[in-house]
Figure 1: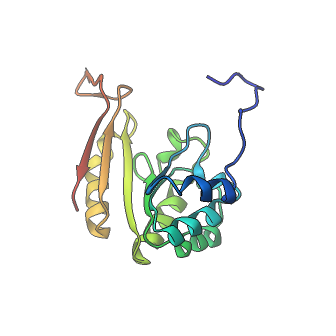
Figure 2: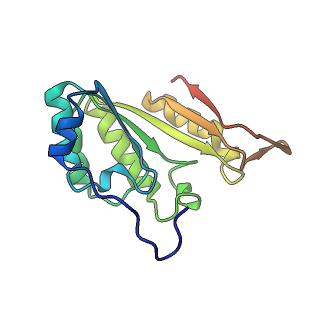
Figure 3: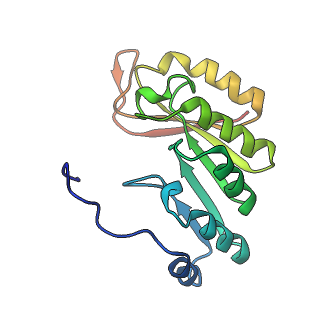
Length: 173
């Protein structure tokens, strides 16, 4: 765990470094541990490398701190990439867990990607604050024909029972 005031070790992966790595791998999964992948300053260039090399690409995005034009450029740079948007609960409420996230903006970016023809998924971690909104989320996902992945964590209590293992359940729309 990172202590307050402690810097995060390492540096952003450069396009040249990524280009070398992809000589050995056919897929890339961009999922942040310390940060969201969209904050790599070279991320769009990295996506272009994925496109050029036909690397199967999955991007998990929960941050909403890039402008719409950045998302448009990212989507256009590699339309075969699969985007997973971490919006926990209804978009208007997702900031309750994902502090400083603008869930409504991120939902709009997911819709933009979807209607540009990209493959997207809505990842919804179930907590006490959003467990009663699951049905509405299913209806929204179905309306937009977006797969909804419910992730049940041990931090949610449903019907008074603690769920101890993370369980993923995809809701087909």
